[in-house]
Image (tube, rainbow, N blue to C red; front, side, top):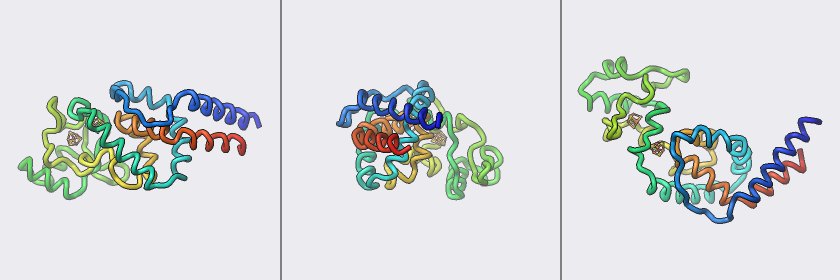
Length: 205
Ligand code: SF4
Ligand code: SF4
């Protein structure tokens, strides 16, 4: 019983916070410095998990339209070479095709490349054996033309079915300023609906 009332108070606090904070239209803002992203995303993490539950019930195509628009607009504002935060903090999975292509580019056999640069993670996928990535230079990726598919596609915000990847998006909000901002802007886009959802949850908990 005590736990219920605490949860209700947290939800009510979030409703008040959202009422005060978000305008109804999408506005573009300064993207956050990657250095402060872990702190900033931690602050909104609880809200993001609630927002995930809400967003999963929305029209997937409509969410994609907004996310793809934001992806275009926000990536126009950021220099990925200057940021490079994904290359510094997470490691991509490498497919066999990636290994073949990159080792050829480097003039190494696949075995030499694998021993030198890769290891298998807990799920059995090949990943780079160091973070930051060994191929990251002050001028960006030294194997840019042949970089792994996962690097080319990161942070996956221009793909269909955004709502099927919300767990990874919430995790990536602490890595990629664009992902962080997309989630924030989505909350603005759905302010009223999200507020109603939280009220409903609060009343029915
Ligand atoms: S291969 Fe290139 S793009 Fe991929 S993580 Fe390394 S430096 Fe970044
Ligand atoms: S994809 Fe995101 S984290 Fe990676 S360099 Fe671009 S803005 Fe930074």
